[in-house]
Length: 264
Image (cartoon, rainbow, N blue to C red):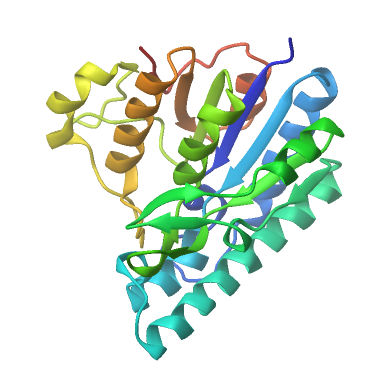
């Protein structure tokens, strides 16, 4: 049976989060080439790619408080501005991936996503399934979403993966960041985390560099630990994409020399 993998390219990796609306094209191109090489070597692998919004979506969202809710005319204008910024980065990523030969199909989450008080409760999956069935690579991204309670909100790539994982049943989720993995209070990489470790780790888990309206590393680890509890055959790996070849190695299932593994 083909292995199914979810791969997230973090916003802090593909953009300069200290400078609003600034992509890192050389990094995006390198990652695209590593992914194309892995898909060429493993054509049976079913890959779903997501990416963060980095200095595009987060910069706009922070100024409007979009994550907390959308109610006033100004906030609704901000909602649309955040969507446009996220889509702009997605266009850049899409173009670089096609130039590298990765057949991505960009799918806009906000076109169908609905939340209830910040939790994603519905998103159309038929386009994702169709893309996978026909040899394409679905490309999703952090975006805005309508919310039954808040009016509107932000959904991160992790939110999308948490929603999709019980449906699509990936064997692995790879979260590619700018840092080497999950760090302890002394700045050392924690090699492995299980859900039972989370209460003890919470005080030392850091936030995010630059603007991040979706919670930073602490939120990622907590969400992924809860997900592996729900999906016991799932393994999550968090590692740096700054080192050339790491994404290729992970996709080839060859293991990676560093990073953090979250599993039961």
